[in-house]
Length: 202
Length: 202
DNA sequence: AACTACATCAATACTATTTCTTGACCCAGT
DNA sequence: ACTGGGTCAAGAAATAGTATTGATGTAGTT
Image (cartoon, rainbow over all chains, first blue to last red; front, top):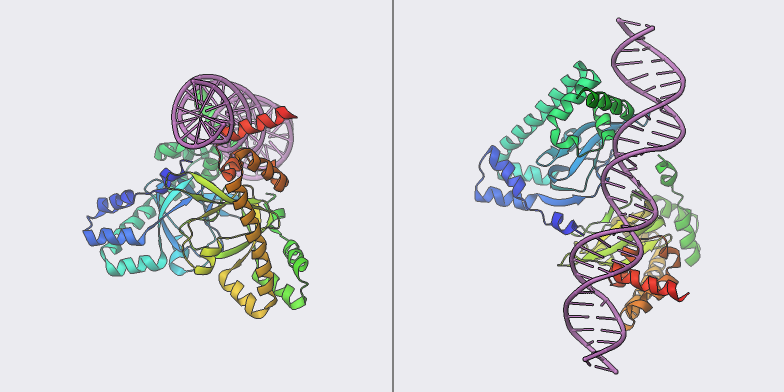
């Protein structure tokens, strides 16, 4: 059971992430230590289930999760993948305190550090520096979201796929093609044919 | 998605269980119906994670779960299996509202009916008959726990195994040997040898 | 000193589940 | 009619999860 290894999370990756944006003093580090809680999600386990209010802001320490919407026809559309050193939450639901329409679940056993809504507010009050940190962090998310949107409305499936394996090279051979297809908005079969075509080229 | 089928749980097994102890009237049935919520846990998913307060009292409708403790060396020790028509919760954590040291997770896709701490208190108040029902139910659990303890301190691994497949015949060929070994407190290898020996006998 | 009741480690074998690919066929828009 | 897709079904391939076996070790009997 190597679950043990994964469980004794170090908070370091998160501190590192913050330090990288703005240096923290001792008290601030302590706050992070106190307010973020480690949690292990097993493969396939829900981190957020549609209908629930998203009450946690999640930082991925290791592993990989996906965020998706299930449409009326029952098809699932992946909005975002997140792996090491990324953030993921349904920000709308988190802030408005409204039920989410999205799901988040684990593609691998995944360790996250999570802060609850209340604790995040408390963090902002106790250390206003985090207002800035979280602003930057959300700006980053925003930018990559915008990029993804643009990609999506402007390119063919093949182009999107190529661009995906470029931007997400670390994920490309880590997550199933099915998931990638769902992210790209095509069927797994069609993705398979695209890949086949690619390998024939080289 | 045959998840649908499993999701539309009938509350009947639970009502049946209660009726079997003490007949319920209409209002009491309605209370059960209102206060117990169905929930599906997928294989490997946590029902309770150590560190969290156990807030649900679980009745297994179908499937199978295990409750275990992970020791300092990282070894996991299975305290209890539970399948159809059994109850499982960390009763200590549930009542004292303290973080649990135990984990519960699903060995199969498992449907449970669960009642929250608050709702259980409310149930006791609205229908005191449930005080008795839950007393009986916990007495039953207590007895089987005691039996297991006795078994454990008084028998060899082989005897324990034999006794296990007798008492849990319905589980013996349903859950992995590894899990059974962990329940018996021996290594999977040794269990394998014991089994080998048994089959040679017959 | 030998025997019993276990443990550990490493390798192998086996099984089940998940993922990927392919073929056959369809359809809508240039 | 060609291209960029989609659907369904079947098989193949890959991976993960389980079980077994051999070699070796150890603590506590006898």
